[in-house]
Amino acid sequence: MKTQASFGLVFLLMTLVIFVAMTMKIQYENLTMDMGQQSFESTKRQWRNRIDALPRGVVESTTDMALKPLWERSSRKDGSGNYAALLAMAVGISQKQNVDILVRKFLIDNCSIILFHYDGNVDGWHDLEWSGKAIHILAYNQTKWWFAKRFLHPSAVSAYDYIFLWDEDLGVENFHLGRYLQIMASEGLEISQPALDPDQSSDIHHRITVRDRKAKVHRRVYDFRGSLNCSDESTGPPCTGWVEGMAPVFSRAAWKCVWHLIQNDLIHGWGLDMKLGYCAQGDRTKKVGVIDVEYIVHQGIPSLGGGSVNKAPSKSLDLRAHIRRQSTAELEKFKERWDQAARKDKEWFDPFEGYARIKG
Ligand SMILES: *[C@@H]1O[C@H](CO)[C@@H](O)[C@H](O)[C@H]1NC(C)=O
Ligand SMILES: *[C@@H]1O[C@H](CO)[C@@H](O)[C@H](O)[C@H]1NC(C)=O
Ligand SMILES: *[C@@H]1O[C@H](CO)[C@@H](O)[C@H](O)[C@H]1NC(C)=O
Image (cartoon, rainbow, N blue to C red; front, side):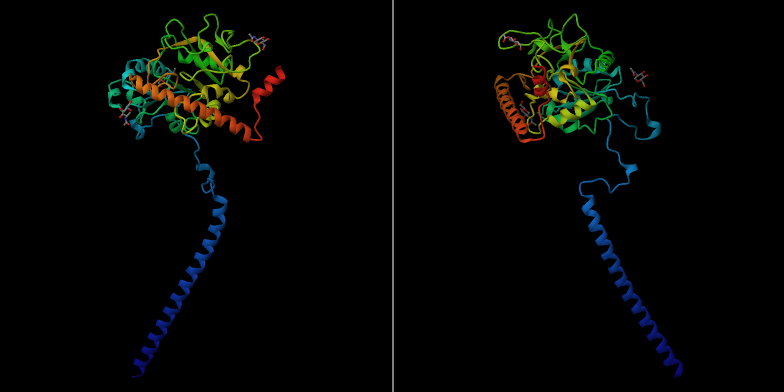
């Protein structure tokens, strides 16, 4: 009888102890959760829009376009680690032959290649021996500037010293990448283009792009025809400080600026070239130039791969007229946007107007 009673008492006591312990545990958990919540709330405010939540040593703010092996030993010997230049082009299958010649020339110097396919045909390129070395991106009916804005963010291409954003209809028989880059560096050019061969190019719009046979590089043109008055006094486009949109080459710093200048919605890029000089990292009459000794041919074939004048993705005149109208409208919009931004930004001043005033 007595043992039964004490057993009952021990059982009761144990139940009580367990109950109290559980209650305390729950309270403790609630308390720590509250504390955690509070400190999290306060730091969340500091963390907004920042990457401080990551330990600094693990942050990778840039990348490159080099293809990587899936595992160590699957790596073929390739030119990775050599990041002098990146060639990016919008291409269609009808220009395959020309693009093949162009890309092979760039691959000799281990240039990285990105092809933006605007006609949907990617498979048609696979038989080319270098196709596997290129990056292929597909979006229907998009322009070179549309692709560049989306896939060439400065952080994504900052491994490269130079960015070539070229049209697909360029002849490169007299162009050598290595020599071109040497000249660009030694001449201190931040934005450049190879000169156009006037004898073979069917599509030359501006005299400043025409090859000067006697020069290595030229930075201005002398022209007094029509409304033009290009002299040594000129300080900006179309006389000096600019290149055209069909074959621009940008230094890393210039590209960072140009990417920001490309408007998200204005995909034809009209008017952009006139403002490129603002991205020249200094005096555009010195840091923007046309390289004469390495020159190209502009074939002027209508396509979306070109951002320049009169181009459309088909032979249809009607379609080309639509695109031309759209491009002209975008040009007006871009001009308005620039002017308005210049007026509204009280801290901004036009570096080249100041320069002209001092000079004049
Ligand atoms: C390109 O890469 C190959 C293979 O790594 C190398 O042998 C060659 O010298 C490189 N060429 C240039 C111009 O850097
Ligand atoms: C691209 O544009 C062409 C007209 O040039 C049109 O026929 C075609 O349907 C478009 N493709 C897509 C996927 O929108
Ligand atoms: C061209 O500009 C220069 C200097 O800016 C000026 O002296 C000259 O009269 C101008 N010529 C014409 C034809 O407008």
